[in-house]
Image (cartoon, rainbow over all chains, first blue to last red; front, top):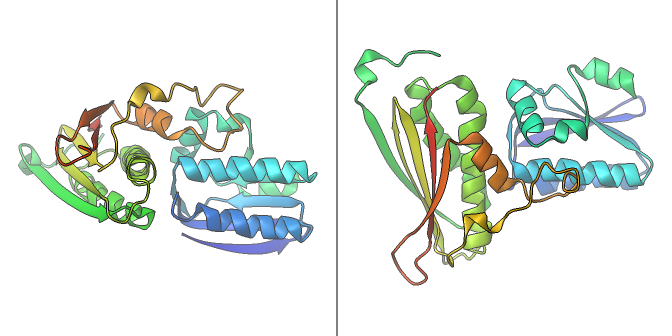
Length: 110
Length: 152
């Protein structure tokens, strides 16, 4: 997995490339927390280049969502393909996250 | 559903992969098991979701829970793939455990904000069958978690 972080206005956008799984999810978590500690409050994770996500990847997204909300911020998700959507639906995490079909719609929704 | 090649019906691929108890190997093992499924025209959704996620979970559990990330312990993954189904055995060298020990419902609103607890749930949701056997080798004997998926 690799990820790139950039700012689009007030929103920190993270692109996840490859798998988000037990071996690498801590890295994502730490990078987002670093931005949170720097005072950022709006986060978008874009999964357009993501392969699969395992339960610990999902767990990190849940944990980040909680931490960001505790700081008065928001985490949203974009570009889940059909299989990733199925994963979120199976685990009912589609009820926990605001998920947009496109990056533009997600950015506009903040 | 794409049909397998007529020449592939009756063909079975068997593979065995052994890894140290290190989660860095999981992705590679998943690719090695996924590849013959792809060759045998398994459904793209099975290739993108069911196989990689369920197998990742099983190997992750073997490494982290059963083997405690002990560098002296290994995980053995054996897979048999044909045009009817995939059967994967994930064997650890840990103490016996009971798959039904984890009875918390990961989708219950009470549990939805937990960071953990979705692994077994996903294995069961994404595979047709999830079973556990004693490995019957060594001391402790270790566990075999068997995942079965019919080709779609």
